Length: 125
Image (tube, rainbow, N blue to C red; front, side, top):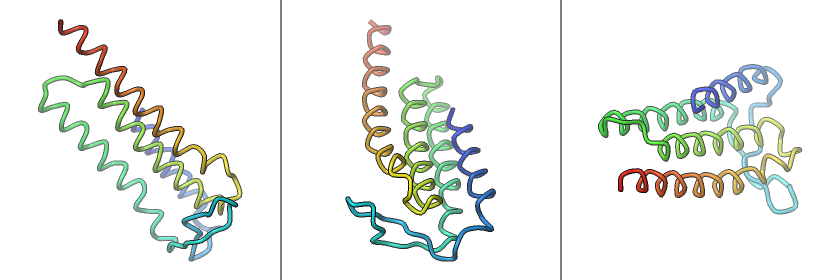
């Protein structure tokens, strides 16, 4: 799942690259008005950060000798948050659903992690 999310993010950036301005809106107020900017090149960091998150999760899983469901949920959630942020920048904030996605994804990630940790502990008993 995390690899798919990283690929979607990278593909969206590549497809939209030529039509993007050099300076993109990066932060928006509650009314949806941009109140911060970032250079277009900063978008290239999103997939890089996502790959780093995925690799970190994978290395932790290798050290533990098993791939924990909670770790997959966590890396997927973090990558989805970054994907949502990239989509906000790519759409110039014209799609408020992307802005609302971040808190929803974070909440789902927390619930998913807690659920998988509880299930894992029940199995170990």
